[in-house]
Image (cartoon, rainbow, N blue to C red; front, top):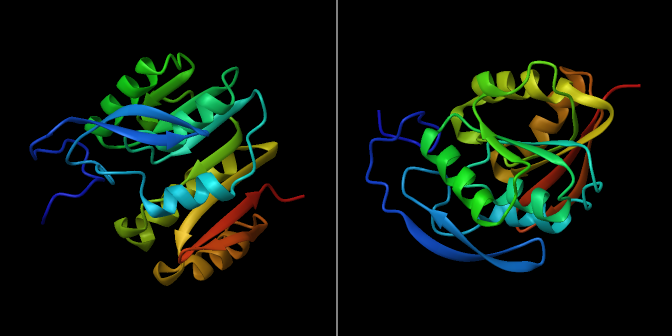
Length: 200
């Protein structure tokens, strides 16, 4: 089986390089590498989420689920410097890049971790995610079943999913199987942005 960006320890050549991207309304320089998701740019889905999601609150505990090299986590940290941002991934190279990028931008409250390193009692006021649809439905559902219920009582999650990769069926699954209200808040460039809240 070939290597994917959701491989824990990529064996492929890292090919680290610098890239200028626009995050939180400013141009910033980041480090990217092979063996992680979208190493050449901010991918289209993430860009749609950054454009369409409402600004995060000024403080709180935030989660970037599937952080890659960090565009969502870095944006959250830049927009809300008083917030604690957990950037979660299984890919060790992605986590290293996210840590390095956060440090270079002076974002000391952005923490790139594996699931095992994240405090078990953490609850999230905001979750942003471009979830790894290509891991397959069973793994994706397990991922969302694990993390979406950890929203704080008034917390909100924003997910971006490609329309032709099952955005509408995922919306129905979150609403029905998880019992968490899930609404489409935007549709742009072939992607849907889904908003998820706790029931009640």
